[in-house]
Image (cartoon, rainbow, N blue to C red; front, top):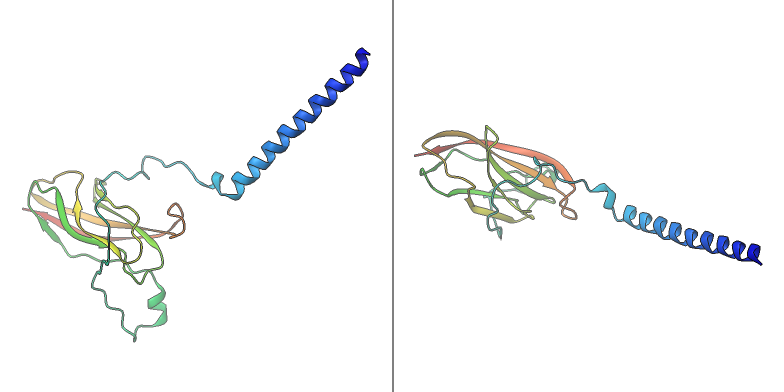
Length: 176
């Protein structure tokens, strides 16, 4: 009789273990299929350090795409360029238009930073046709001339964590 109870207990333990292992395997399969393991934690250098401005629709950089442009030019991602900009010492915003031209087929995230790496502004995801014209700065600047750049990270419109190519546009900030 004791042997019969031991056999039933062993079978019960085996069945319970099989159910737990099956559930774990199913959970791993679902997590793998949804890309859970593909997402990596952000490092400190990946985290936005600036402040986010108000992204608006209908942004227009004034780039004209004519019908005479080659089809290869139309297919490429357009990135705005900049002339030098001026601002007053102590200003907390910069009048600089950053955005994603409506002709693009990718999302853009813009980061304004100084040559020394100081991040002054980081946007949220800008879809084609969206942009920001007045950037709230994370800090004020003293009088002087600063080498700066807007770093544009191209991302998939379906998943902002999927980085594509990147570009930068350099210019000077003149603080009076």
